[in-house]
Image (cartoon, rainbow, N blue to C red; front, top):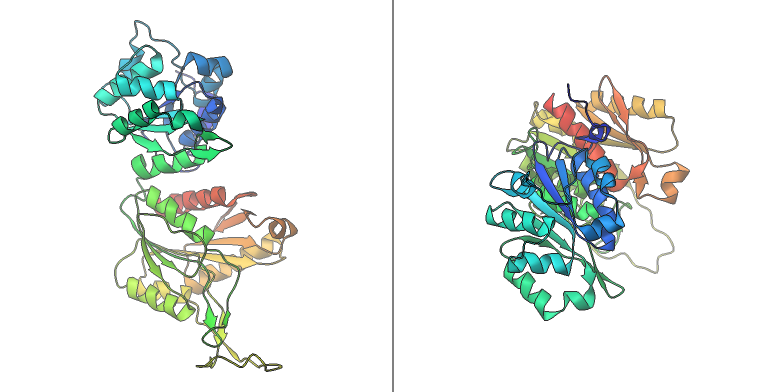
Length: 411
């Protein structure tokens, strides 16, 4: 019996979009090579099987044993009679080849058919066998603008996928590992549970008009809902996003319905739910109250005081199961300064009230959250169990939420 490498324990911990996918990660000699370890782990956390090919310049910076530790697979640092380049890059031997980081030297060899290193030979075979290749360039800006490099990029741009570098301090720095992951998930990722499923998400705040220019609203940016939409698009789902006036940019590949008021959001929800959805996620911070009689004209700004009567806005979540009984419904429950036990109790009250399958609960009153709202700790609650994310940045929180929705939806 072959003993499982300990590093493989993380495979699929953040999702299964890359399950069954074989990814060849080529690391050339840029100082950004150290980030390739993180990228390999990100691929694995989404189910990928990663094999690294490292140049001599890369191994001068980082010992090959680090890449083996990260992936659990042998690292290719030279070509032998075992024909490593054929094993990983011949027809249908891998699902994609990612070059991270890619130097001007490696780019030039690929563009001109020079096969004198393990990486250039793997790329040459991969390009010939039409395995998708993703290249993240990293070099000094002057090198990036060298006419020869420009010519090589131009020659390859319809043959491989380039991920643009960031131009900082005179350098064309390689994109961050998370950006490479997101691109790979969008292009190659699929989820057996979510692929092709129809998902409806609400996100962002709503605004309620006091008069034609003044409104009541809240501080929601829409980030959580938009990131969730992006996660589901990456997983191959067909996403409809009903989006209030948030500050985040919706993901490409989603159908976006822009709304302003809670009434508009509710109407859009009802209209969209005339068609069947597999999953409905209400992540919007919709207003609980709206002015009873908004003024049709701008209120005089010289008034010393004004009185507003607010009326309760009907809860959209209470209508979802009435419209589609068998949809998988996910709600959000935010409280302030309550115990974990009370937070779970309130989440289960919402499950009973609205018929939710899951509720994402969090305490936004804690000192830690107020100091840095970009980090959060959520509890995913169903009628029987609860699971806590721990404190993470919002991107990781959303991946945790998506993973739990996928896991529980598939069961």
